[in-house]
Image (cartoon, rainbow, N blue to C red; front, side, top):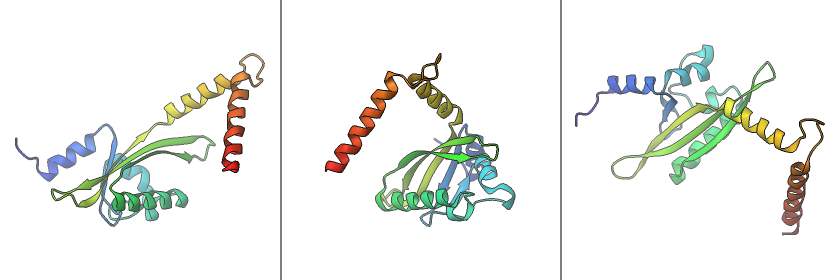
Length: 163
């Protein structure tokens, strides 16, 4: 099998159906797919060479990403989560982030690889399904499912306090 040179690999990565990024052990971006770079960098140019602390519009999310990167580098365990990004029009966008440690042939962690996927439509549909399962469509009143949910939540809080 023939190895691909770095230019061909860049073309593959930029053409991938998901947003891909690589970070070094300093949590700085080494590579980002074009869409990932455009969305994160905005008018400030590329995010390559920067950390999430420097590029994220929402500083609390930037700090969470950075701390998560540090944890991945320390433990070698990947992570996966969905973040909400409020928009100016009152709606929100939702992105799922999956990250794993990258190891060299000796097993040493040399960075982080991750993907970012826009899951906004999926999250909206899940929220709508949850709402429909708890509110009567005809009357708009909470139904039995909602009451069961609330009772379970109260039980969890009570058990937590008793421990």
